[in-house]
Length: 346
Image (tube, rainbow, N blue to C red):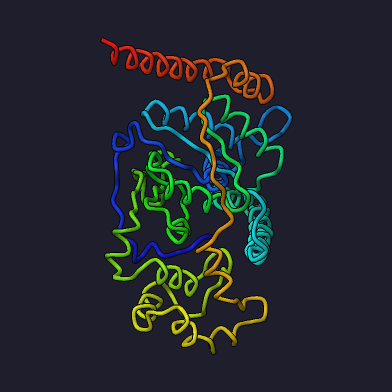
């Protein structure tokens, strides 16, 4: 789901070269769902091995991350732990969405409508424990750092971005990272560079969103941004308040300023919501202010070619030729780093 405030947020497109030699913290689940949703066959069917096990996420992890690594970007993947109890409603809505998408997909299949099949199939994605475990193994075999968060991955990634001067930005599609205090948010990093739309192909470039610039542009502080998010709807109260979009929420926040006063003035609207959609703003506010996060040591391991081949070629029937070509890129990258290190002694 995520927070939808894109219409009021300033951003700027960046080039991959802007991220050279920079370390970024990736919201792992968010990125893996991108891979599962977008890396598919023409009819929307996910990539699978000979035993019909989904491999779209492994394909994204390997091929797209190799491209990012060769651009000189250092990657830290942060995985979700136990979700807060408040996220139950979001999970229910996602299940309902999947059920509806499944019905529509089956109808499109009956009609042999490939475009509709592709559209609805991407809404059926689900990560299971085996996929998560294997994703971590592949990432570590590629020399990419992996961190297990105690709770929300995006909160942990944002915390590391805020507290560790060596981490340049948080990578996620979700604007919630800003509410967790991520100084810099990068979107679209894991997407293909080109996307097909009804009007043709369009270029997709990474976007950089800077929290300080957002707050200055909106003329509010972080507490007020959190309030704005709660009014619009977050993962903890996905439906927000009826009839309040980002622009109206900004007006309310700027008018009343203080969180207590802001929510006092919309208390009647909160109480008129269906029972399942009512929320305690203080509880949500606290989750963004004091998320369950930990200090974490970041370790970049060595590339383990044999492990990569075992996972991709032996276990999941990836093309040996294609995998070897990517491994050659990683070898060249390692050699460049070695040469760079030696040049410091000359």
